[in-house]
Image (cartoon, rainbow, N blue to C red; front, side):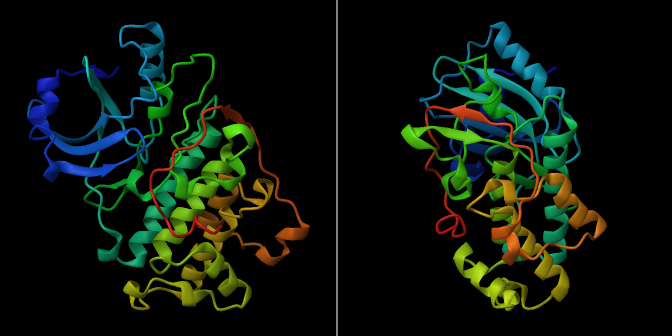
Length: 317
């Protein structure tokens, strides 16, 4: 099971949580890159700062049940939870990880590998775990790469720990606004999450990876309907990609992030059929008159979504 660390261990691993060690900031708190001398491994340490969601007491059965449930989920494309630390003021959750590489320095071939790796992780969470697990905060900041550019999805279990209601599987609204499925937002501040919500966020990440900076989804959609979708491709790639592969990634991103009807998005099984087995993508212009079958198990959150984070594609979807 996960190890309980002393605060001093994590402080030493992160140079006392120095700014130079920051990897990013999310809804729950700040992530730091650290090095544990005792075990000789690099880690990411998440410092919980958001006080609106109380951590369960660390010595309760619920807390340990959730930790054990998370650590029992194992996949090569999921970041592994290795330990935690709890004090009077702060709470920490620690993950095995490697540093995040800036996408502007990599080639499209690497992008494609990242896309497949994250798709594998979501396929596992959605269709191979029983009960299935929703991530609900898929964004570039939660994608970590190792030295061989293998991508791993982080934070899939944090929402299960930071949850004061043990009667619900996933209830904390951790979704980052720009990547949050517009179909999640319901009256009276409620939010409904389903597997298609994760698929939507995955689609926005695909557009982030493949398209020009600050290009909104609406513009990419217009280029798709005008059969000029390659005009949306990231200029920094300098045309160093196969046209058909770029078209597929952008089109898949548009399909996954279809905003108006979550039932018309693909499941992760359908996504993998495209990415791994070369299954043809549908004509997205026909989505208005067709329906794609996806499973819509829903969890309701009465507290509403987070407004943290930003992405061009989610703003006008």
